[in-house]
Length: 322
Picture (cartoon, rainbow, N blue to C red):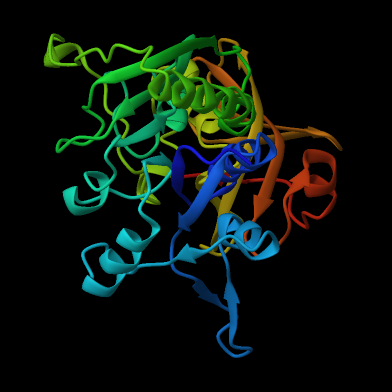
């Protein structure tokens, strides 16, 4: 194992985990991990959900901390004991200066966009929602302002016309792990020149804020079929686009939509009307044509391919979405 640099890794989800594993495989010196607190699920059973990063730390006997408060005195004192040379952050919440300013070589972050574009918590989702044809990754030194530190490395990647957020994330996490190691090596060897983000016209920037449940609701009245299509694939598989499906007797249920295809076609039907044309075709009318469902999930049921979903419907006429 490499003795230098001593690294504290900061992350929680599967995107983070891929990079952590790559660092460990390459035998970098991970002296400790910071990850999110456990979440409670199945309250009656008292079970807890560990982050993927915590599970890996337990399996590999790597020390870890799970602070609820990143300014907690005990947490900060324990962090100092690790005496890290550098901190690497991948998919975590905002760090206070007392944390990111601690190592002598600084702290750098992997961000899933071509900064300064798409600063924020959900860049992978928003680039697809906005119909971009390219995105990428950026490593940068963490500073006071969120996602605004000096850029270390950037790599660009094309977005497929039918690509979902989940598919793009898989590609970026693989690319990102190699990029983190490349950044780390260049910092250690002093072969990198950080570039400021300040010389960018802020009016041209697109943000990537956290996505709420209301943001995920599909607006079928949108005049652009492309925008509806992009929103669905940009939210698939998480946090997932949804709508309200009307059955009968004023009964509405939530209907999550994961995969669709768009059909450009002139028609005279009301927006939101549902047409079931066969055992494997369900389409919803929009202004410029139809959105044909490939995979969906009706409230109370599992995610299904359209054929299974249609087979489970008791009513197939006079259906619509809001």
